[in-house]
Length: 382
Image (cartoon, rainbow, N blue to C red):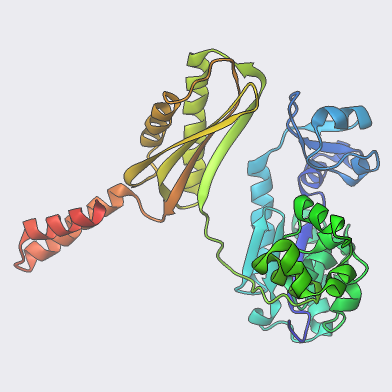
């Protein structure tokens, strides 16, 4: 824990919906819901006007329409949202070299690393200035939480919503956390929460009272000890500037189950091309191609193929995905398809061969054995 609230958490307010309202004056002040519009679509974001009707993210779109039939329902425009997110992340980058994006609309910032804050007053000033700059740059509002740890900074930003700033003074963590639900602690999801509730533990104060030994008995050594530390307000997780991507994937859920094998193959080809576009935008290549198929009965199958080396070639990814499709029985219909690439790298197979050629030519120019240079590089690729 830090002695000053120099970890900042920014969470943009109803980001997708707010971006649509800002770009279309006719939507301002009206309920807006962004998400998949088909029968199986879900809500990605609801404006605060729509939330008054009970609409919230992850809700089935059909239910949202019943709750707010007069709202504007829009499909997401991710390229538009990414452009705005880039502006916001640029403002955060001016505050510190340590910015940890969590999504398009959410990030942690280490203000101490940026040298802009070392006490509560300076941290609050930075946070207020950031909120003003975001509004001036994008026309959107963001909520800011400031604390001595990531956990408390995120809780503070939730309390600040919408369009506010909340600062938790270091040293007050236990009092702040005690009356809150145990679900507020990172890592406590529905299953763990239910497990703890059955043991009579529902608040953070209950966690502290139970003690570490009891939590270890209930949840196991690692999870129990971690939960106890968090309940005491001890969160030493650093802000990490680079969050290494482990995979890139895209998937589609279809309004009507697909039965035609040719149509399914075409959808796999289309997903493979979209996946490669995303892969290239991230600056990566990958060597393991993954196909995901959810069938009519909700059973989900995954198949994968690992290549000799990483690639970002759309033809290679598409052909691998097609081969994987041949291994899957789609009789009865398909409701979801996905294509992903894992085993990411920041180079491609072709780059390696080019590097081998360059090294071989350099060795030949220096009087070395060209064949030996090529053989060594080839072994490295394999």
